[in-house]
Length: 269
Length: 368
Image (cartoon, rainbow over all chains, first blue to last red; front, side, top):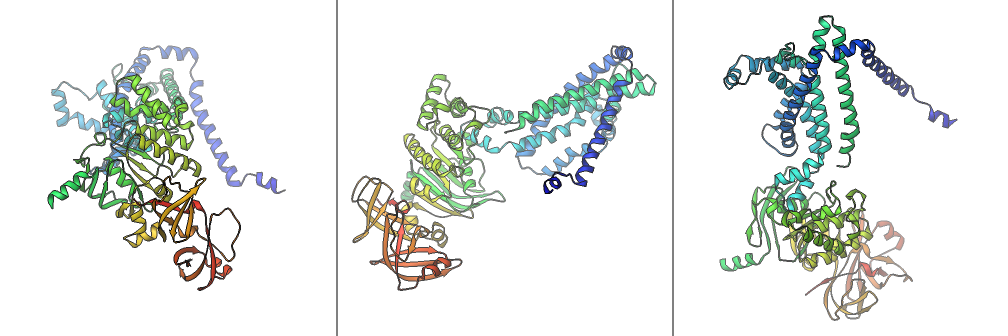
């Protein structure tokens, strides 16, 4: 008798598991439904239309550039937050985290104001750099949207690497940069990889900031997420859904790669 | 006077002068240390006394607030760690997980030597000395604790450091591995002629490895000196309490066989120790920790080598323990027991009592 009672699930257990199941199902149906709506022909036509082809190329190229820039800046930023003590460190940490909490569109308008009208915009314009309503603007917007996420992941990665590995390397005759290259970065490679995947996924998916800063001009600064919004408002459902499907597929690949490689690599460091 | 001080200072291989470090949680206050070349110093002290911070400051990982560190007469206080030639070994081995055993050991050497054949032969040589030459292709995570620590020792010694620092290197290992590694380490550091500072909380490391010992508490070095001096003449109550040795005798090795050394500590009072000494008639200091003395009302037959009969001269209750002092033909032994053992044995001042202690607990320290 006791054995049976032990095997019985509690009410809390049952209700929580049910909630988890029901809402995962709903989410799955929601994601799955976009695959059912377009006809195959419509999907192929939309996929090879100039607009979607352009948006796909633009989104991928700007995202790769922006994500590379993010990694170049985020690695030293996260490393210094994890290893060094410096004045205003907690303030720096809070400011970096801030864009994760407030709406992306607010970040977009802030970037627009910053580069649009003011001193910095003029200086850059005189140097021949145009940010507002250009491809460069798309990259800048993606950069600032993804940067906090990247720093977050890298920060916990570097925290996870025992500084004693670096101490031992230094004591055996290697300088700071050599130690970073030989020891720290290889040990953090799982986290660096995970951070890159998340960063590029954020860059690809971002909407509000890219729309405001890049302007969302047809065949100029129209990314995939902007294409969904435009085509939906114009009633061009096939194009909108096709762009959405591309984004979903990219997300699935990102999650799959993350699960398969990055997390496995992070174990044992 | 100045010249004398200068000479003395020059003679020291490692000099730590008035070193203070503040890391918030851990700190060092006015630490002074001196070591000669090829000395082996064990620093003991309770956890949190700043022993690791001291090692890491000597290695150059922390910048001291004040004080100076000299190595071979050169001021290295502000030198970066990689320029000091000081290796460090940790309790948790810190083997690079993305390198195999060979690459771990070769790591420091690759910085110094280009020639791959020279590197390989040095690595194999070091690995043989530490008996890990069969493991060179393995990944660190597949090794046992003892094998990991032998790899770490090989990695540190192969660069022939000026100074080898060890932070509780054996405390994560079982007793047998500990003993085995102690012997290997002893031989390896003498082969490489390495000067060592070894942080430990295990007194066996002091007996078996150290020439010099320093006792640390709350970031301060309370006493430093040759082992026999510190244990026989503690200058500080804490040192006396911490080292806990109340049975210290001058002795003379008078013989021995089959791994047992006989030491005469008084006329006709001979103790047996499992510490080995080759030459007869050697002056030694004999140390027996009070908790290793067993009291009984009757003599008993056992493998215990040392059994003495004496008269109880003092019974003192201190906290949860009882200190019992026994006079054996004019030599006083101190033991520590629980109040319940006291009741059970009915120990009273003036009673006759038998003392027993194993030869392994009779420690001999050089008194040259």
